[in-house]
Length: 400
Image 1 (tube, helix red, strand yellow):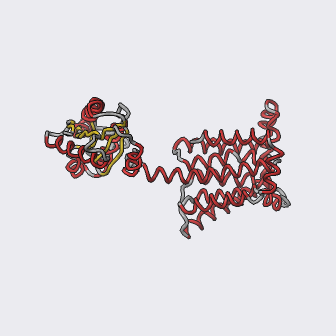
Image 2 (cartoon, rainbow, N blue to C red):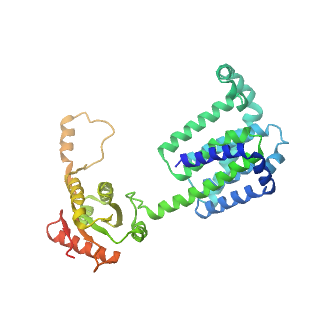
Image 3 (cartoon, rainbow, N blue to C red):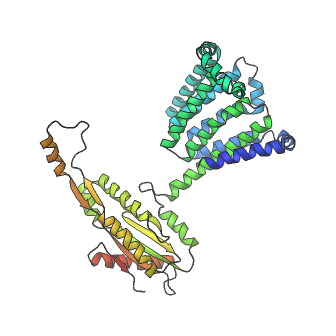
């Protein structure tokens, strides 16, 4: 998710070097483009409740040449802007989207004002004091890397690198398109801060506005077409995928045996874990099959360009994999500290129950008689019912 936008930014930089004069003339006439692009990104993020991206759009207005020129008359504004943007983006990456209720908006504004106060304090009062503390490190860094001297003081570099590393760890821990967009904005703060070219700044802001729109749309697509519990494509994705199938394909219907009884006996939390386990196994089916969660404990596997005889061996491997996988259910949560009495501990351990989960499968292929996808699914469902009647944990092929 992170590499394509970064490659696009590098391409923009290379294009700017080659066509700087033409781009400068173009952006001179389209000075309003940054306002429009950020406004569109803000409106889309607002519509989908992405509060962090909305706040980020307002923050990036500080780089718009007209606003930047207006605010540069204030003393220490450049240093304040740098600290304020880095700290605020770091906070946005570590927090979550809180929506736009009155309480949440007030809370966010108070945090941003507190960050602004801290940034202004560092820029006006503490910068000189802290810089002297880091003077030995600054001399060492500038001795071996004199080219980074124009990036700022050692305090600036240390704070920026620390925030970037912390946010990168956060991105690895929980990677999604919104975090990706905010992290890229944090990375581009440094070149935007030191750039003397209004055209390059405008190009970067346009890129970030497009990236924000892409992040919102991509996440919304993921929410709509991926099952939240199991992480595999949902029923809506199946309905879209069926439109891409040709004249030859096979549909496999599957569900978990005795799932309702299992759910009632061990609870819904354990039932959810079983669903995720089975979905993970089914998603690894070979032979070109694509797995979807149809609803409840039912799953659908579609094999394009395959007939029923080609599909059965691959389904049999998945059936055996699920049936041979042992699931251990603990009667009580694992204790934080090991008990002193080992006999009691072993006795409790023996109370844990090992259970087996099995699935049944019904297979049907598209024929001249059953040419519609819905009809093929009905045939596969009939075959699944036959597998249930035959004792479960088996595969039945529809008689077509």
